[in-house]
Image (cartoon, helix red, strand yellow):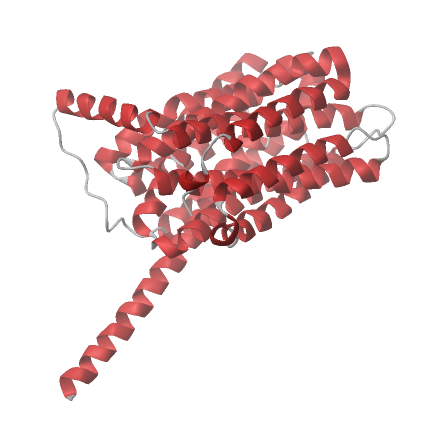
Length: 410
């Protein structure tokens, strides 16, 4: 009887330990996502100011973000492979810490090339966070809670993207843009500290110890295995299109709204980022719908909603533009959340490499399509931007529709 009581006590203790561990993972990932994306996207509302300060066109100014996302994309696979040796947690801690220091240094630049160089370094360092986060979660979180936990990480990303844009925009109504970078860097350092102290060590990860030749053979085999799966390739393409549309939208909506007839202030421009809160809610909420509706159908619905949001922004009425922006933002985060968790479900080991390939496509889309969108903005104004993004979203919808329902990883 006494041994039975001890067994029950031990089971209860293990249950509480597991729940506490899950809470710490969620808290850490919230800070990690927040830190990463606040520093990455804090430059978007500053683009009109940077264009005036350095005498640049809208397309040239867009490179202050595109250079970061491009370097981030290039570093993802390398960071995921390094994490297979040194571990998930150290890789992510270095990523968020170096990124915060780089953001601080951006406040000291004297020329646009210097700013681009630091933003490129930020992208290279930052790759260690998104490249490893999904793999860490897929290894350490129970399958039943994986979709909601990934949704929370993406919600933290949405919060970071919103806060970076909003804080910088508000600050620049009172301070120079250099001061905004300094404050964002300080916030990034605090977030990195919270991430470090909350994230538990990995229990289900074993560092790989291989010769260089065997490691290379394994990497090539893993690439082939992932790229041989049609659903994975489709999701990789979806990531490229999704973030390309999203980045283009927020890159150039600021130029539209600061000009006539709207004449938005920096604070008003930053307030649009409030809609990222909808993205946070949508990322968490959509995870609960996967089992009932299926991942691919939810992605299709999100893509349709993004197009409807774009069409609303064609109006000259500000309330319709605001409504369209809200719908577009909510739908983007919903689609990205489902696609990310689908990668974790579909991919075989090494999952970090599959996540890295998806994110490589994701951030390449931000760089390539984010800058290409500038051509449509320059030549055809906002009508051209809507046409450009609608065509891409229709392509994404078609690709998802071609997948078989039996391939849907409920």
